[in-house]
Length: 267
Image 1 (cartoon, one colour):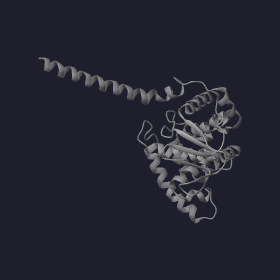
Image 2 (cartoon, one colour):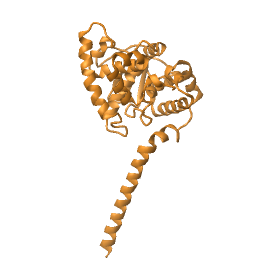
Image 3 (tube, one colour):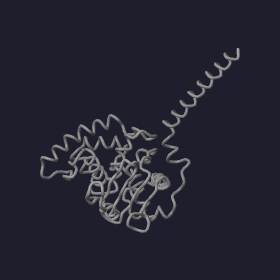
Image 4 (cartoon, helix red, strand yellow):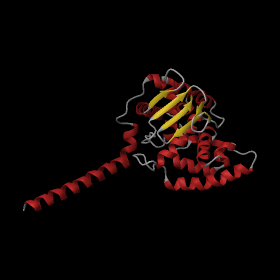
């Protein structure tokens, strides 16, 4: 009798656990974006908002309601990361705001994504020498959970928003693709079909770019598939119209993957 009661209790607990798990899944699917953009998120510190207002072109183009969401997400990103200065005294509030702004710009179509695996962001004043590659770098993304940036080159990318070169977006794009395949709460957030479509189209375009002396994508994009994606992301945001006109299928795949279209920002 006692054994039977224990079995019934365990069965009831098992059923209850599954019900709760199902409810949590449904809530995450249907209300996760709302929770991550509207609820339980602090408003941005004015010290971080001002640099966005002055220097982030993407933020400037957003409508009023999306600006508030962007600001909250920037604040949350900053709260989640450890910013580490290398070769300078400290990472300033302006640096934090603009670096976070690049990350949120890229993930704005994915409200629940904050590149969780990449906890530390190292900032150098200029290009830095890597002991691993034995050469100088402007930026890199490390599977150990590091995003490394040269501030001088980051600022250069922010200053000209139409040249298709943006170090912040480039390195965040590397982090994004890696984040998508790392087993954590953000695992496989990119549309699988769109990723497969992108991979096929990208390989064809890489070969074409290698054969042509001049093309839409700069030659560095042919280094490997990861670099092609990062360069494409730079152009996706900075040369959207031209990208769409010359490579509509590639552009469409990125629209689906990133869940946003830069040509429709603020509309």
